[in-house]
Image (cartoon, rainbow, N blue to C red; front, side, top):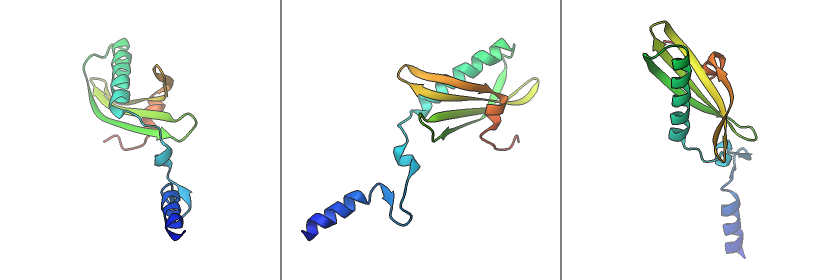
Length: 118
C-alpha cells in the first residue's frame, strides 16, 4: 500500500511545481520546429522587401516568441539594415495542419518583442 502511494505521488507531482502548485506553461506548449517557422518568415520578409524594391539588406537580429493563447500565437521579429537605414518588421502566426497562417504583420509586430535598436 505504501509503495503504491509513493508511486502515485511521484507520478502526480511531475506536472506541477509542488512549491507553488502552478503548472509550467512550457509543459503544455505544442512542439514547434523553430527552424521551420523562421525559414517560413525569412521568405515572407524577403518577398516583402523585394516588393519595396529592397534587394540588399542584412538581418541583424531575429527573435522568436509565443503567446499562450488557444491556439498558440507565435511571433517572429526581425531587425534589419538596408541602404535606407535600420528597421524592424515582424509576424504573428498560428500553426495549421498545412503550415502557418499569418495573423498580423508589420513594423509594430517587429517591435513587440522589445530589445534595443543598437
